[in-house]
Image 1 (cartoon, helix red, strand yellow):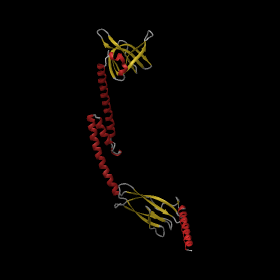
Image 2: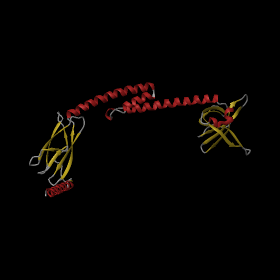
Image 3: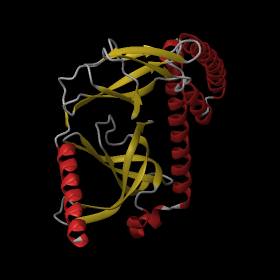
Image 4: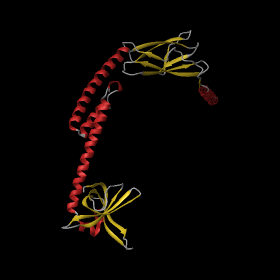
Length: 302
């Protein structure tokens, strides 16, 4: 008998549990439930607190951050929210109606006016300090025309807000152009020095043996034009680059991507890189191979 009663009680418990599950299943979010507050944004007072009054339908329950809120019989209630931070703080409020319909709302608590003013004052001070440092850094870079000094100044300028920049961006950009021009000039001078050094170390006989060995190396040559041909915007010159007792000797091909005033018998200076072995057809139907130079700069000197 006791065994039968126990089984009956167990069945009843399972039935009640199933009913509870069904009740949870019909709990639905209902967007028709309106925000109980007139405004979803409030501002904390000087003590970091703000009281907010709300109203819900009779019998509804309210939770603040999942903690129950006391609701009066007429549906009115009040919550106290806090914000001691320098930025906005958010609270979640949930309203549950008796029919198990619910809706949630996000309430924003802004920092107190005193906190905002303090932050603004601190930001103003920080920005002015950055401006002073940036101006000093730009002045240093202006004097040195050094890339590292400009990078240091730029890192400071990038931290300054738009309202404080004044003409710092224009100063930085103008300085960038000056330093870029200086760097280009230095790079060109270095390239010329390397080209002339290679010209003294790599003789014509070494090039004639196998110019491909030195392909891509900067090179300088001065010589007499013995043939000039233009084709489709490209100039091909044959130039003798070794001055003998009476005539210029040792022919190279100069390939220049552009038009030049150089003509036969002109003396020219060429800066560029070693092309390698250059082969061409001769007028008698054969072919010849000579060292080639790809010119980046070509000047008629005589």
